[in-house]
Image (cartoon, rainbow over all chains, first blue to last red):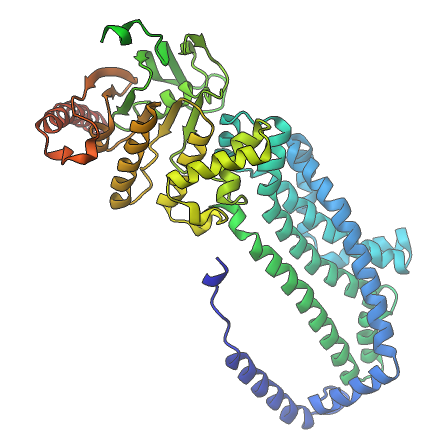
Length: 252
Length: 273
């Protein structure tokens, strides 16, 4: 029940923010400005990036690849996962490759993607799509496979047809897993888009970080990092809430 | 007495035999779970089945429900052999078997919806039975918001609203705390006294077995067999008096316990040696 969730305290996080930002300001002022920037300088840089429109443009580029790639991943990943979960052999055949992909650091395929897609929008789109889709389909497959046998039996005892079984038992049972896959997929999509922007074509928010680094402007880098952090937190928190909403569907 | 002898039994079991493989491999060892179980249950009879764990009582019930197939033998419902689950039999599950994504009313209407009942008819039928088990305030609640006792009331309402005249109950109150269990035993008997459905009720609780039953079927283990069928001569309605204080209750209970105890002692000795 929702009422059972503990209400999060507001004061402790606030206090922690004050201490961290205060300490950062004090330390930041005493360090070479080419290496580090205190919050006051970051804030000034931020307003400059906002007024020049550079940040908005960068964010727009990032979001476009992120959302389009993620949407494609959802559209492809869920049906693929259903097939993988429903047809055991297919899942077994794919398993070693999926494990290998999961275990391999993402950046190692960046050179391959350059060969296949170049360094433009398509390459970034693929980067977002690929990891995200794998996470979504693996979780979906797990959900389809992990139908609760007791509930399958209940439906069977009341003479449910195969179609009714799928509609009333298998699909709802898989939904919590699918939603977990959506959250993990989103996390991976965000990492994918930033990697693409930092190592393929220097654009978007990842590009702002890369250029800030080469221009020795730490404040600029931190501005982009902050925007990415806020964006990522909003997306992941929203999906996390969705995931919790379906938590009770796993068991009574 | 003569009438009941002539009437077609609600359920007949003929030579039920069931073996289980101990693993998935083709030449795996097998254990005999049920050996030549024969039984005839009258219409409107309340039969409880008790026996040491591993005696195959749940397997027997699942075979009666056609959730599992016997290797040999027949299950005959109202004169017809059955191999698939049917509308005349409804199951109440030990772990309740409620769909966590469905509300109380949706869970109760589920079997009717499966059979394409018109929505309002299904709803009315379900509401009637939800009221009978006292859950009308929780119609739109989800199972995880209910206590175990309440969840099993939903399970009971669901089985009742199917209109089945045979209730198959697999340790339905086993996962419920002792005090709630007693209350539910009382409610179940009250409902049974109103409708006189045929009930087969598995339990591992000796008091419960005697308290509810017209006859207690005592099973023995290794392999599962009918050891004895003990009639329980206690007047109905049983909760109108202190049924546990009745001399027949003590007599039947003592008789069954004596045999169960022998089985358990023997089982222990086998395990030790």
